[in-house]
Length: 78
Image (tube, rainbow, N blue to C red):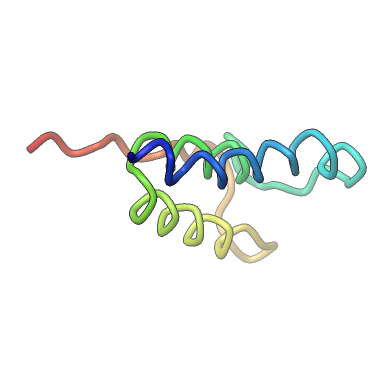
């Protein structure tokens, strides 16, 4: 069930990566890029937390935001 919920969003992001991103100048200040981060966050944390992490990351990707290596946080073991 979890994969069914995130699959359309991962597909949408991959479509952006392969169809739109190559046409634009590279502007992401982070490693991994924001789109790769979003996919990994969705796959690691599921839809709600993954989307929240991705939105937070997109919001900080601007000239006055952070930069450098910023991996997806590890999933908490309960």
